[in-house]
Amino acid sequence: MEGDMESDDEMSQYEKMCSANVKPGMFVSGWDDPADLVQEDKNPHESLDREILWAANEGKIDVIREILHLDPDSVNSVDDDGYTPLHRACYNNFVDIAELLLKFKANPNAQTELKWTPLHSACKWSNAECAALLLQHGADVNAKSDGLQTPLHIAATVSNCRNVASILLLDRNIDPDALNNSEETAADIAKRTGLTYPVFEMGHSAYRVETGLID
Amino acid sequence: MTKATEISKCLVNISDVKNLEDRETNYLNNEGEFWIQLGTAVTPTDYYTEIFLQQMFTGERSRCYIQTKSGVQIEFTVKMLKIEFINYLYKLTVAEVYQLALQYKQNGVTMFKKYPKFAQEYFCRAAKCLISYQPFDVLTESSEHVNPRDLQSLFANLQTNIAACLVKEGRYEDVLHVTEFVEQNNEQVSDKAIYRRALALCNLNKYEEAKELIEKSNYAENKEFCGLYDRIKNEWRRSDERYTNMVKKMFG
Image (cartoon, rainbow over all chains, first blue to last red; front, side, top):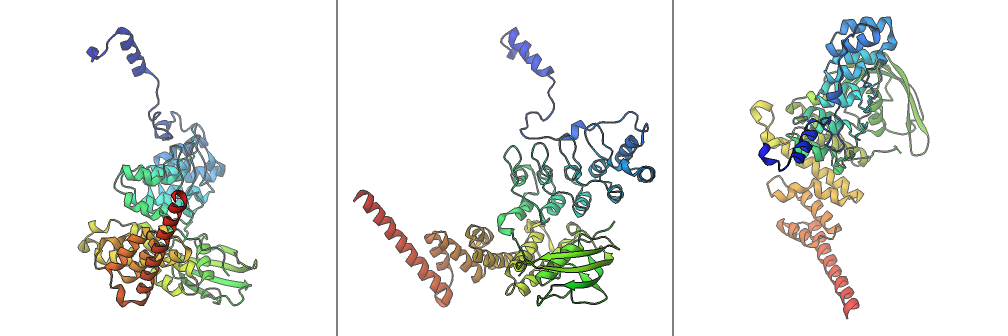
């Protein structure tokens, strides 16, 4: 497309822009999708902390069980981005592993560097059973990431998120009006994203009730 | 590690109940072991007890406290003996969700007179369960084992009940939202839904719309409709008079 450039200066500017080190998603205001940042450990077996993270990613429940019996504190291991074994189990939808980790007191509200919780991870990949399990075990349904994204915002980015959205919107503590730092609610995102927008009707103010203190 | 969901059954032993006084309960006055089917509570105390049960593990024994308006705490000890998990709510089939919504609606009807807030909670919960399968028109009876028209009808019924609760709270914009189906003019629209929508329109000073809506029904045959119709006409007239007087004062 050289013919479109009117001068060498312009061409040079264009090349600079093409080769600039711009992270994907940088221009999506308020978005902090960490999927591109998940690291792979080249030597996962060097320590129990690294091994449990690797095993949570690979679905090796027996390895995890063994590690947890040797060192229960390894449940709190984190990689360089702040992901715990529970985050990894949840974005891979390893429900049995997530249950095991919770049994060993994994923190359901652990945050990565970008403040993603395991519930954000489960929602990102539409892993409904993990999302339901986390909420049963005390996960904050309104947890906010760096970009003020709640798990419901993350769910709304998935075209068919009926199951996860239903789980979140039926939770007694959900705040469906939460705004991310692009001033959008999850329903705003769902409206333009895909098939599941009708389900977000559950978050309408008409369906909110405070039962309050009893007489 | 299993915890109960909204539709689980729990085998419990409840003991050492204090400060219940004359509050109604079907759970806290039981002795020995007994099963509780979650989602069937029809008293406020039992409703909150079910929330406790959803937090507990099998084998757990917990002292539970429910704060009351008078400041006194209802106290009791629960031993969770067994949890029959059944399923997560989102995994239910359309037919199962329909049955659950019917159960919630029935609970709401039972509680409405004495405990309207809890009734409203049940109606809303039932409506949300149905919304999880919207849009209904893409469902088919043969594959889902429930007629989509029955779903729509139950949903309209719930919305009409929710509208009654919202009218009591003065949440008229929300009343308009849940009674939007009235404007679709189909055979499922009840007089109650029309009345509640017209009442909300009147309270939001949308007199023309309110009057038109009532005129679509057989308002002359219904005493309440006639009363509302007169009220709309009178308030509309007074509103116009106020406006005329204001214009006169400004420019007269």
